Length: 377
Image (cartoon, rainbow, N blue to C red; front, side):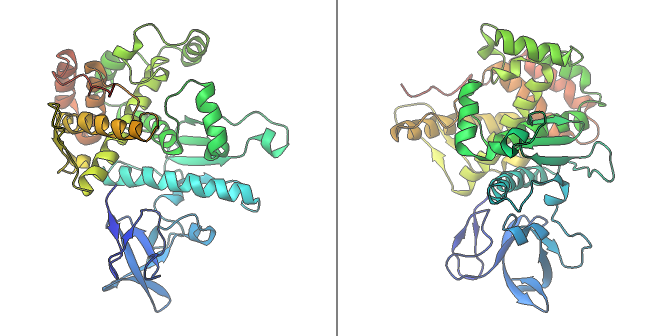
């Protein structure tokens, strides 16, 4: 995530800001320009500060204080490029639903920030029966009505999210219940959208054979694989080959978990780069300078060389505050090989036949990259 500031007064702005806290001027995110712009009201619309030729409207969800994204004033669209993928939202007349939905929308917009920066395809449901769409649902038990529990998941482009995940206490309960070291709304979005992009970028692509060589055969029965995972847990020694225990359950889940971690890496590295961070501990041969755009890095090695020292520093800082590791995961050569496949699929465009062979070769060779940054004792 980049650093933003108010063009009118120079005050730093967070991605979620809809108004400058210093000068009080309205502000909104322009997804085409990739920046938050200060606004001036002009002739029934909003004009970019210092750029009156650029006219906007706010996304319709701004009426619920749930979106700060802008729509071009001449556009026929009511919703912004992120919110028009919503298919179902909860009953917003219920205050608690509204509170949770706002938190969900913050995480979703951060997801779309990355997808747009990477120029990934975003199919809409009216145009494509398997286009990307979201159902944000209340669990029937919570609403005191009869019905099956709402499970967060993906099905042919439709991502369903139980809005209880927006409640910190409930999410922590589930994180503990499932033995997960990390569970966030943004993490859910990044994982589930990985399933969507497997369908878009791998399912009918020449890279499918390479996927099977790296991740396994996705034709193995998915229901049986999940049942076995929940009954038996991950296999012994799984940490050498998978980024998480859940990734061991099925090749689809392995890809989705790897995809999510790739987005974690890219977005965090951009934030570090925006702040001009450097990692150069005196006592360790572990240095990195975040001075590049990770969304368009030519190869995965550049990302990993910066990521490993950065996560060692972040985890050390967290431990100094008495907190758990911010990034409690280990990237082995095999996992880095899987990340390389994801990197290649994102950047390959329409034809991956040449680069997929290189990807498989890199995986077999173990990429010859460092296994992981050491953890502070």
